[in-house]
Amino acid sequence: MHHAYKLPSPLVFYKEIKLVPIMGLVLSFINILCLLIIQLSFLADGDGIGLNYGLVADNLPAPPQVISLVKSRNVAKIRIFEPNHGVLDALQNSGIEVIVGTLNADIANIANDPNFAKNWVQNNIVPYAPTVKIRAISLGNEVNPSDLGSMLQALKNLDNAVRATGFSIPVTTTIGVYLLASSYPPSQGDFSEAAKPGMQQVSGFLASNGYPIMVTAYPYFAYAGDPEHVPLQYALINSSEVVVRDGDLGYANLFDAMVDGVYAAMDKVGGGAVEVVVCESGWPSKGNGDFTTTTLAQTYNQNLVRHVTSSGTPRKPGNKVETYIFAIFNEDQKSPGVEQNFGLYNPDMTEVYHIDF
Image 1 (cartoon, one colour):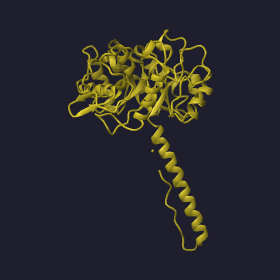
Image 2 (cartoon, helix red, strand yellow):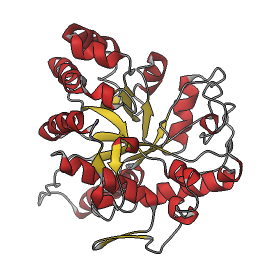
Image 3 (cartoon, one colour):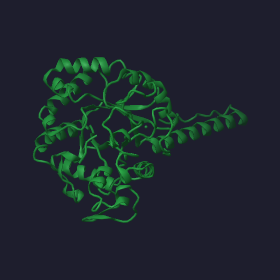
């Protein structure tokens, strides 16, 4: 984390069939339709929210327990930061979708050596793709401008390696809002001069393939860094009033402003049609005094779930933002302070606070 969906064929009835069998068939057909409607409404409700499954800890439950926990909460998506085979094994036939990351250290290897890319896919994707729903592969996490120089070649090599296996999986990368030199108001969102050449190449690749861009967005850090100018309720997605006016658009929360700032920046480098997926957002429950309480963390994450499953942003009101909360667990081997306290759960699987999904 960086600071700064076929209906059944119609039933054919024959004159010879008596009324009672017809009624039975009609009732069966109605039952099937009802089940389909329930399933489709569940997909619509749960489709937008996921959880980050971080593993920087020495005291976490075994992956099968964690995947059972995720399923029990009706969460249908997770993200992992590297291709952990224990997690991927636990995901098999679970119905849970996953974003799989590569290590940042592998970006250069994948860019420079197509065989490295091929082997990475053969080892980490091919054994699991038949039984695990892989949403996307992300080359690195919160990449820096220095990573972007080789990113286009890395994306091409990894995409070619995936396509050669016959599987269809988007290949992308993960950036943070820190790559924006300007983000206020959101329509002025623009990448820094250092990031712009690389993002132009990345945007072209993603746009031509219909792949999304992954973004980390944390209103918490903006609020904690400048509480005088960032209203708390605006950061918590807790305001119904417009706080920021941007031409004809009004922003009642900072999350939307951050997402639309990225959309504006992507537009300026030819990626206006690229979907923004927020692969990380959250609020720590302790570690920074009054800025980090369980009440604030619960408020932000619950509001985030409600918001992204019900509406889009002012710039793209029809597009719900696919979003992943950071994180499932508090992780004791992360940096001391807030970094260790983003979890919804303690390592013993008790809740830090409750979120209704």
